[in-house]
Amino acid sequence: MLSFAKRETYEIKLLLQSVPAPVLTVFSVSVIVMNLLANKSADLPVSWLALDCGIIVSWVSFLSMDVITKHFGPKAATQLSVAAAVLNLLTCLIFFAASRIPGAWGESYSATTAEGANTVNAALDATFGGTWYVLLGSTVAFITSAAVNNFIDGAIGGLAKKKPDGFAAYALRTYFSTAVGQFTDNMVFALIVGRVFFGWSMLQCVTCSAVGMAAELICEVIFSPIGYAVCKKWKKENVGSAYLEYRATLINGKGNAKA
Image (cartoon, rainbow, N blue to C red):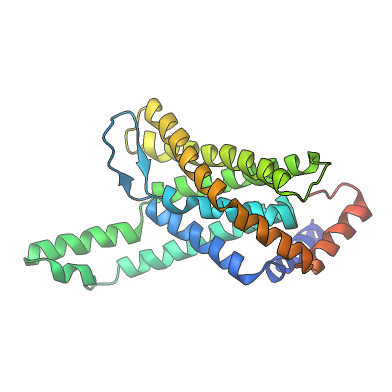
């Protein structure tokens, strides 16, 4: 057990050193922003549909995971997803601490009365301080959907025998995994938070998940050429060779360490 823990710790450390900083940064920031924006629901003209503003940026997280899965494997992408979720929890803890510090937010100075300023401060403190069930729902939803997305992506990629590094193969694996992963993310969050705490109906949960999935999938399709170009660049430059060689050693040495 100890050797397993030490091996996993070393593997994650090696992975964090191997993934280029810009992608790791964009991925982590998108997870934090996505969960913060999940606090705000979108006002829509139809009663059967409900959305939160997290869909604005959640596709960035899935695009990042698809790139990482293609180059480093689904296990690596899932490990980084858990790391990003932990980083988000630490950020929320910092936000919570800041919300408990007496003081005034800049926006409160635009209020015309003292009562209005207090209302603004209380609202911003509550938003940045976070609500436990929103944080719980978004964290569970993200980790679950990340695992679904990454391993479906990897499984489809493993079936591509003809031109596995071509754009068609990349598009097939990323579009399908993103659709399933995004629906899972939206549905888990809708069931935990929307239905239980916001009072959404099952119809709203399903429509929110489906419409959110469609919107995020469109973004994935639009920006997938960028993700594909990054994958080609990484392969050409042999990015993360130390991690990839280590994983190959595990696979060849044990035969059952497939990511």
